[in-house]
Image (cartoon, rainbow, N blue to C red; front, top):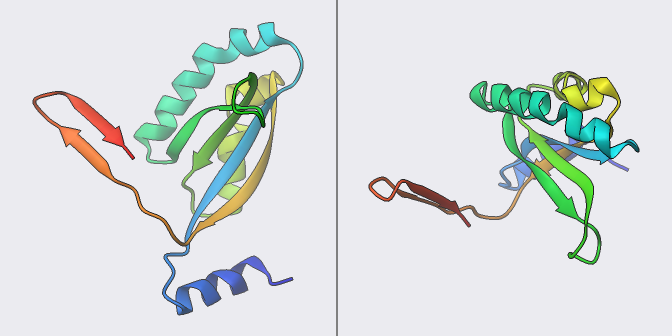
Length: 128
């Protein structure tokens, strides 16, 4: 099994982007009231991370059927290292309070495309 940095170097050598981001899969720890109670502080923290350019994407995920919301969430961080991303995830008020737990993983983006459509006079932005 290749080590992360070896894999990243190999991906770059073949012309892949090899953009390293960090994914936190956040799961409720049991009490829905605790999640609701910590939501304002969590959202304020997410806004701080966004302003600091450490937050790429965040939001809820469905279950495997694609239909039910079970409280699972995904947060994509931009950080200088796994340890820095770990510190960002650990400082989330949801995680500090114990309302949610998380698993953090590295994510290497090699392929794909993103289209951004900005309509200034329409005051809209869409991502596809």
